[in-house]
Image: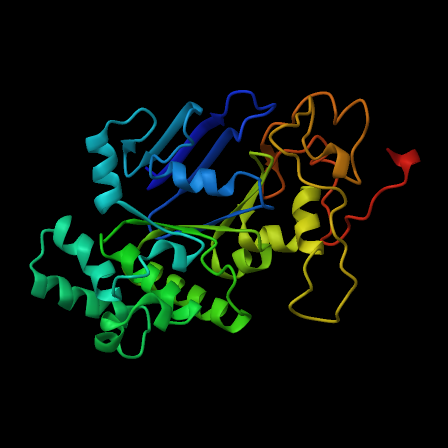
Length: 333
């Protein structure tokens, strides 16, 4: 049984033209690192928060979400507390928004250890020192006494990782944990996360818009567009031979890490908002491979294509080379 499993998860808000999430199927096993990749507004963060039972207020929820065998859709308060207190933890995007600025780092780390974990003050302090050392901070005793504003962004994100580990979770949810950090610090943070995940055998779900980062740090990747999973496979397969035009577009929008630099080919147009809907493929208006009368008639289902799963009407016909996302001439459409 997967540690985290989404089964046809639907999340919809009243008066919106399309759902936030539409039939999402995703799984993370213990000891596995999985990435969920997509542009802003694709539904990635809503997907991650669903693993803690945190759904938008007033939303209609369908499908199932299970964490370590516990069903979260429709779960009661006791079940949600059990999951949040000991099975799953989340690292949010902005560490400065996640820590009380007028309390010391030590208070942030020891509060859950004492109130939820039942540890004494001395035990909680010792555990906090251990966790700060585990995430690579150079002077844990001094950092425990400091306030958030006295730490850099990278150091504060390490504190957030330590805070997520206070519950000894089996599942770590990372919602763009390297946002607004420089490239060197990003690499350090991802190395810390990957090291802890392997050392403790954690399941890890990484939310990111950076497909190269996902491929470098995760075992498998799910690509999301407009609330739907459009492609999934191993990191190596998706990087080498993406089957969906959107996946190829994400790769073509970032500079290559190796080889000769090449011209970037951004995806034309803008992502579909919640006030928009389409009877066919949601990527139709931005896709250089789209065929009128076929792709715009019904949404493609996620189905085997090559080594992975792809939701594209033309997936069996072609594998899309990375970086081939230029707008097609109108006569080809």
